[in-house]
Image (tube, rainbow, N blue to C red; front, top):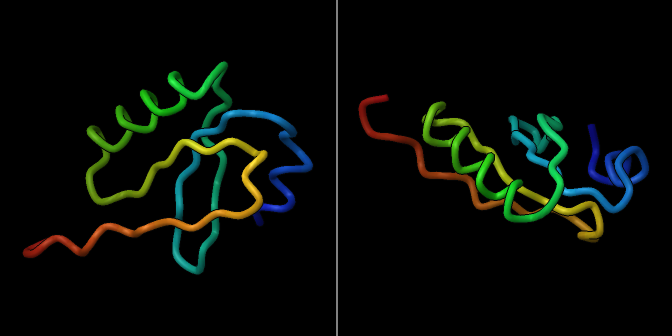
Length: 74
């Protein structure tokens, strides 16, 4: 889903999202606040190494992610 579509579907919401190739983003969870979203994204990163999870608010005008460097030997 594109970011502009997410903002329309989930107005004024904290989301936990996963970033995929070609800048595709998928909503995984809605959260009550920023702390809950950041904590959940952290939990997901701990249990699913190598995948990119982020907490974002739909008031952000756009998304720009720093992708982690590929792991050596992965």
